[in-house]
Amino acid sequence: MNTTKNIVSKICTDAKKTCLKLAEATTDQKNKFLLDLAELIQENKDLLFTANKKDVEKAIHNGQDDSFIDRLKLEERTIHSMSDGLVQIAQLPDPIGEIVSTQKQPSGISVGTMRVPIGVIGIIYESRPNVTADAAGLCLKSGNTLVLRGGSDSLNSNLAIANLCVLALKRNTLPPKAIQIIPITDREAVNELITQKNTIDVIIPRGGKSLIKKINENSTVPVIKHLDGICHVYVDSDANINKALKITDNSKTQRLGTCNTLETLLVSQEIAPLFLPKICTLLLEKNIEIRACSISKEILREGKFDVKKIKIASEKDWETEYLSNIISIKSVLGIDEAISHISYYGSGHTDCIVTENHSKAMKFLNRVDSSSVMVNASTRFADGFQYGLGGEIGISTNKLHARGPVGLEGLTTKKWIVFGDGHIRQ
Image 1 (cartoon, one colour):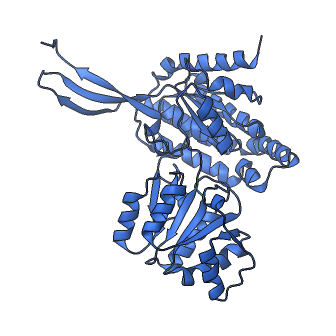
Image 2: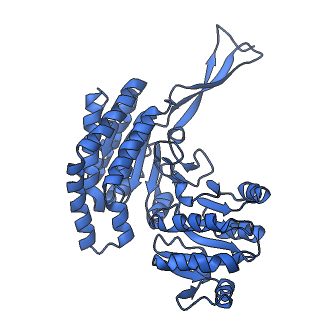
Image 3: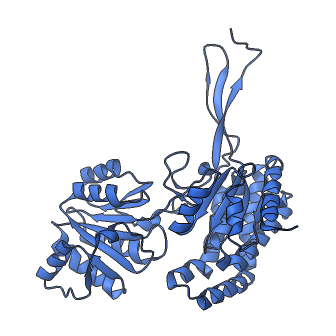
């Protein structure tokens, strides 16, 4: 009987069996797969747009908000980004089989480590169809088999991309079950996938906080994840105002619904009278709702700024990932208070300082404990493609195994290897 449990179990078992077959794949085969898939995505973009249109129309009918639709919608730039990411992955060195740090020991044996695939990766994601292509490329290049379970809202888009993945696998005589998608929208499929501890080696969830929290609490399989993207930009007293304006604007408004979008702006009180009126004018013009601390609002009022549209921030605002057209602003005494605020309220995702003072920049880099820490750059750069990884399978705020954008290396582990010549232990 084809119950959800049986279907998921069969897919995961097939993925596990495929690991040995995929281990035989050459680097040339894997790279050709990536280039073929990039080409197929471009050639079949009209097919992808048609499938995606069904998903978007359904999401609109179901009352999903604009940021959700933005994440769901495939556009020309999304198609190009998917293809470019696959090409970039093909150009990266193949990490599998790399032998590192072989050293001869007093006993005469030589000991080193070898990079190897993790095994079977389970990806659970919500509304971003591009994750299907990104995950397929990164997992295949790193020698892992892949089980995908996308959100019900993007099922048509995900299936269309997954079909192209299978076609590219077959073209290169790679096992077609190296990349599989669970075609079930029932949430029970997620519950089954995260308890497949005998076949799945790691689960990587991509989606909202509630989804990731549920998976983290209920999975019997190790999880690589981040819960929140409460990202900060701190504008220091030694900041260049024009740089600060551009970085803050881009960090917040370039895309509203991503985990690397700015949520809380921290501003040194020394520079606040000059900076706050300019940035608030810019943000309001872009229909960003501003929730500011009382000190920030008073600074604006003293500068003759019309504060009627500025709301007072609550304690909850400092700990909220909006993923929307809302920003919280706090004036701080200086870098120490900024770092303390980030340490207390931050989620360990991405934080930035804008300053021309090298000592302060290094202090911020050393003391802010996040997976990405930036100096004079938009938080929107916290992305595997932008980091030269060819894409990412997710952002990790874990401190063990992988941290930050998870690319090829984050999808590998190592094993110890020993070379001897008849050596025995005395």
